[in-house]
Length: 219
Image (cartoon, rainbow, N blue to C red; front, side):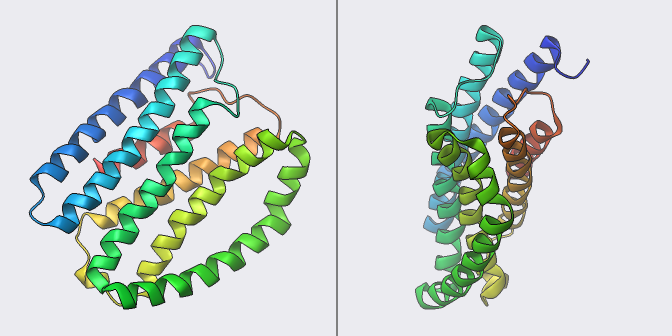
């Protein structure tokens, strides 16, 4: 299957929707069968993350297969994609807060926030700022930059785990979850580069494999 061909696009889009539907179902099942309230709510947030991402990919799949191109941006797909980021953050933050206690989790979160602010400032100066200026259209630019900001929000939660003292108390399933969100952040970064070059993203490139890997890790 050649890059950009219709069969490759269709295979990629349908595979993502099917995989995400399975992960959503498994997340709901895990939430229902959880032995304690912390695990139940954590899996509920992960299920919401999967549901929003699935909704965005369903819109993308329909647009590419029916209209012959990806959905316009900003648009409904961006809305549901971006709603998935707070859910990812909430899943890690809630689980960490319950394992470490509110005081220690807050202290680690504040330390992580200072680090992330520094990274965000450096990223804006070196990369995000030029991307914003290059896009020109403010609505499109703000939408494109919302994705790396969402990734920074998730990384904030991950860094708070590293800075905290509760790693041994966290459930084992949280490790692949954190890895999944890091993989997603890498794929999002490449997507932003394509958007910054004023190109239309076409399914079938390596970020699709990375996004599917993130779901496979959680599933």
